[in-house]
Amino acid sequence: MAFYSGLSGIVKGIGNFLTGTVSVVGTLFGDILGRLFGIVGFFLDLIGIRFKKKLRLKYFILLDERGTPLVPQESVVENFNITKRIFDEQADIEIIQAGILEVGGAPAGALDVAGPVEGFFENWSAVGTYFNMLAGIGPFTRELSVIIVRTLGWDHTGRAQSFIFPAANFVMVTKARIHSANPDTGEILVPPATATTAHEIGHACGLIHRKPKENLMHDIPGGNSPVPWERGEKLSFGQSLWARGSKFVWYF
Ligand SMILES: [Zn+2]
Image 1 (cartoon, protein in one colour):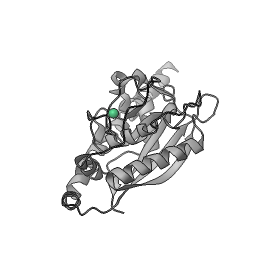
Image 2 (tube, protein in one colour; image 1 turned 180 degrees about the horizontal axis):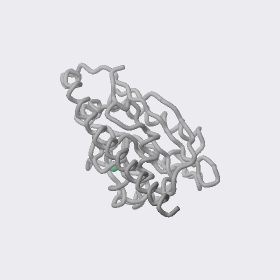
Image 3 (tube, rainbow, N blue to C red; image 1 turned 120 degrees about the vertical axis):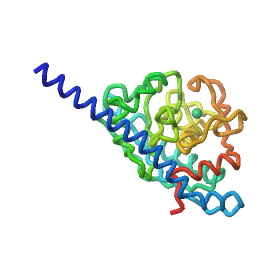
Image 4 (cartoon, rainbow, N blue to C red; image 1 turned 90 degrees about the horizontal axis):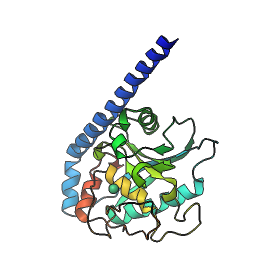
């Protein structure tokens, strides 16, 4: 018995390793390929001929241990609408809703995801494999996924999967940052905490952190703290140009 359970552990380990590697390498490859093919669009953008592009976004709401969704559907719809508005205004990207799904049966550690140190290995863990299977792996995954978790390690409120974020095929956002009100106290967070989702999508589209507070990619340490939310919604022209070249952003 011990032999067989040991064997199944090894098989699972190999499976996780393969899924994680295909996900990271494949997604990164897809992004590079997408930017090469998109070079004409890039130059059109650069001279100001800018057509609206599209990004398909899917939400996964994890169920807790008692089978209760971490957040209600209405909160996700509100989150989607704010995220859509930000990308429409800042980058001429139309975000299309590709589904809001409630999913149970997550492995241990998926509801409360570990910190960045463990996060380095996350792609190759059981949790990483579960999330990768939800999001879809490989270079030609067209939809970007937002996975709503309960907590993230190191007090993070959101995190683009993977330590190389152009390779992210999903982002994680804590339940506290989905609705514009704190789910436990009902207090409205101003400006909306929901910019977290847009910030993480920015990472998945290849954007890095910026200094100005009004920028969407401004980073706040200790993001779970109750201090006023200081991140803005702005993207510079260069940032919008880079985000529009992402493999998740298409003309059709
Ligand atoms: Zn960030």
